[in-house]
Image 1: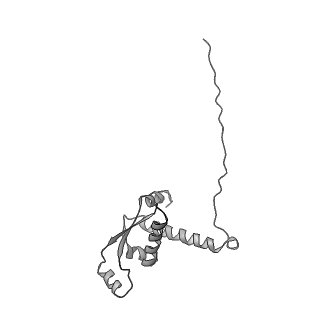
Image 2: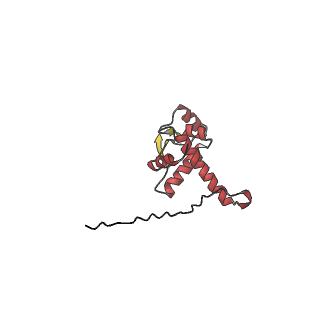
Image 3: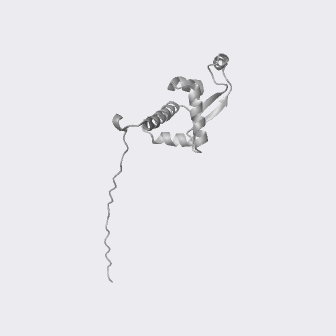
Length: 129
């Protein structure tokens, strides 16, 4: 009986992966500023929402430092521009504080709970703490 010998050849492929870096000031443009601001906004919302299932808009505003109107506009813009939005707005009735703020014009006409969408939760799991 003949014995068949096979040789296994391993091939290691090295691939250079370029990691993007923030540009230096003299290499920057105003377009870079807009990208960084957008990234900062996303990261602030993701970090704040990471420890809760949902948060009312007023509390989210206080914790992030962004205005209620800016948060709503940002999330609504995300919903319109992509089907894979990271956030979910759920309308809720205004509490007493919200009604008072609305009366003097400091609150939006509607109040929302904000939570992460399944895509937002998936992205959050990939971010380091």
